[in-house]
Image (cartoon, one colour):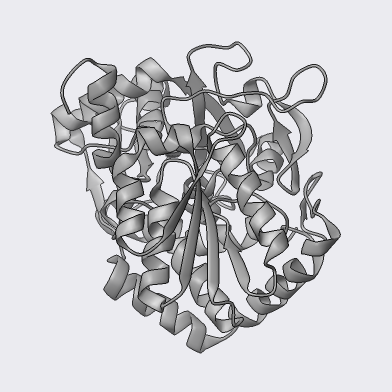
Length: 396
């Protein structure tokens, strides 16, 4: 089966659930993308930017000492943290910005939680000469001040969002309102495999470079493919980026790690597969954290980038088919992993990525000593150091 289908569904998940005003721009985007993906000139331009501006291919780093802490697995990190701007987000931001320019859209809007997608979008817009407006919840702005400054430094307007929980969900709400008002001149660069069709497909395709590189690098380094691949999951773009080329290889176990937050109570975590139900949010049908009355629930994670009540529809599909396993890592374990990887390997992970390696610390021994594991280090932790310092009562 080729996913998504023509209506944008991954099985029962996905689709387009948007106001009529947005149907035409979504159809325009899909047409433009399907032409661009077959255009060799577009592909060459993006590949050159990924190589000479972003710094791809990103390295694959074996972390032997940390691997011992994870039950003696042979652990390699796919180093998306070494991309220009510090995370995997730039892969998609550049691709969509090029697509927007091709469509004649001179104004870009985006949402951001941890700030990395906002930084990546601001970077792409500065490079290509596009106007950039980024919506960000006030709570996230407070815990990611560095990234707010970086966006503004590159000429982006960062709009604080004071409604709701003042986090990623609410930033997306405001970005959609802007888009509805300005569809003629504006392209909305969604940062994850979320939203109405064709966004989950487009973002996945731009991020699939991660898994293609990782498989080729592992074959060169070890002579074989991994036994296990692990990635954190908020919306799910870094995870599907790593997993997509591996899905057809049944020998590779795929594990996505959600934010377990403070505990299992509704409002204390962002683990959609441990407390969610089928629902529609931000234009797509997927698993959503909601209360008994169907109202969207508040979420919590130490990581701003995982603090979201829904998940990409393709992930919901693969959870249903059991092709990808989904587990969670709580705040405390993610913080422990943040410190331990820093101490043992000299690599400071983003708090998002720390959830994936935290799960490995707790469960790696169940994978078998010597198992070949690749984990996506989706971003670097510089942005999180001040937050962690304050949480732990230290001066940043």
